[in-house]
Length: 290
Image (cartoon, rainbow, N blue to C red):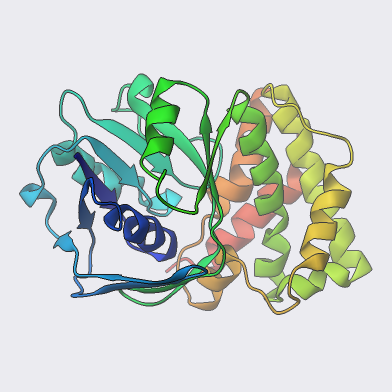
């Protein structure tokens, strides 16, 4: 029996929590700001419904075997308040977030105890505890003992858990996809905007900056990545909305720093200028600042 705490019950957090709860050998606790009685997730394989144990006060939490942090990247301090109570001498911490700074975002935790997770689970939250999971999706982790142990948590589920020997390159490829999504948030246009030639070229330019910095950081990234990513956007349903676009529409803070700003910040270490990603970060942050 594994004791697991899921910190963050947004679309992805609720989805992974529902699958963990469905396993008979997991004891799952949800750590949330807003309590709800029923967790209901519509998945491609059917509806998962449960009445989970929910905590809203970090002081009430006890150490567990695994903590899954599934908050927005900008809420690391809020997640840390839970981690202060959930981490015991043998606790592993999986960080299911965007970007490439999974470990450095939580400097108080031994990096050896952190499993960085690349998430590709399209899902939408309709209300607290009510989520639609569009595709089974995947979770990509390093191919090491901790990553293997994390993958085993989802062995019963249809979520594809991928073990990779080059997690850094996989993370930068995902960041290349995400950084291009700034065009959607800046124009407030869904995926169909990629079919416009000028918008598509702006996406490619953002991605080229990402590739330059990623390679300087040690990632292996192909030359044709900008074209393949734009083609992926063009092949998506034209009315689909990514998370940073949805956050801006709702007037919420965005993950612009983790998706665009990080490219400019890390580029500066290597003397690489990334003006388009820096601009996207600044504009999106200012657009949703209070």
